Image (cartoon, rainbow, N blue to C red; front, side):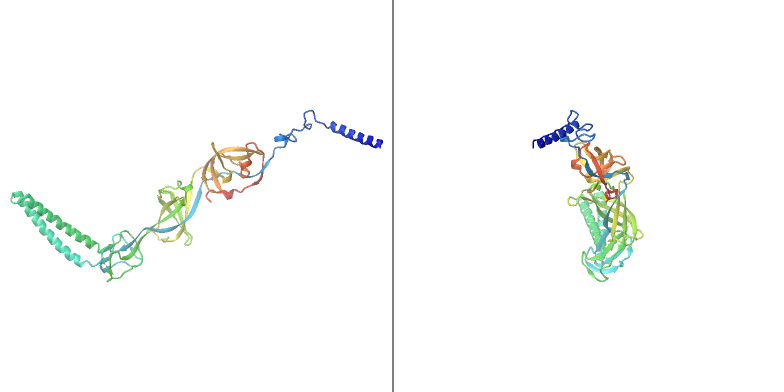
Length: 372
């Protein structure tokens, strides 16, 4: 038994001596190795620094020539329902279904025979009043008529002039004329019909020019200016026309956060039809310098401005940038990035300058166009 104990003790002693042969070099670390592993710096407690696996996005220059597309309804530049201004019997109708008419054309006429008779009487009274005024004026100059007589004659003259003008105005109301050149719709009445004031006769539309109103998102609200060219396309008829912005709404809608834009387009050849649905394409910032587009989640803000993390030799590095147009999924970078920079787009909350990163996947550029 004693021999067995001695043998075990010797084995333990040999093991301890062997371990001491591989002992530290006096500084508590393995010879030729740093505290964090082979040749590297360690993290807290001597543990190796962790490398983050992240997704990247390679920044590539692209021309800023984006298009915003939406839909709109075409409508006549001017549209009016022509109606009778006075009551009476319709004695003449020149309006034809679907006819083109010129500004000022007489389309309908209401009986004015009684008014014409009244006009003749008023004109006769006017002539008499004028003669009386001229005679009284001459007598006044000779001292045979008082100033009061002259004033009374003048008042009578002006009253009769007003009566004539009133009847002429009433006669003018019996005529329905085209207020602008355009195309008629379907006529609603026939000759001989009794019309009340306000009765609709026909609708007139100015279709040589059309207009379309559409909504532009708030982020593009200041991009479009009056006079800018806008492309309109009727997909069903395969017709594409160029229009111009004629007006911008003064405010942005609080409910939709959009701005109303009014576009006019020439339609002298009748290629487009009022009331039809059309697509609208707005060119945004055409002709400006090239820029980068990055995923929106890569952008971070602090008191100094906007910045992103990029991968530089396996380490995270901050780059401050100037931004342009934004969408829910992308941000336009106008300056601050270099061609080929790998922008880190995941694990942002864990990133710090100098942290080790490894790109496990690169996202595709086509998914982040600012005009989508």
